[in-house]
Image (cartoon, rainbow, N blue to C red):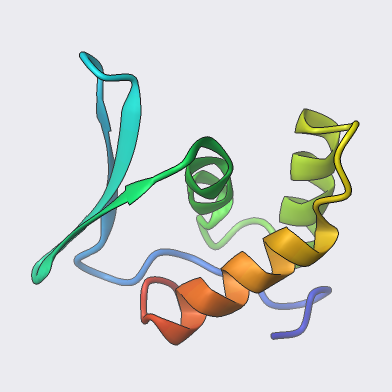
Length: 87
């Protein structure tokens, strides 16, 4: 994944859903669903084909200024790509 040029987006058939009663996000897809933590949901919300991986990282760093999250964001994007959630 090229952090400067790749603009990840959810694959066709995948969508984020928020359960308002539980204040919880889920990634829904034809074969099932995945419960997401807050940072994973934020990352996937930005996977809209408009933001580069670097822009996603920058946004998350602003949301969590006290944490060194660069490796976690990059690892999550790699895992999401590997799991076929994003392209």
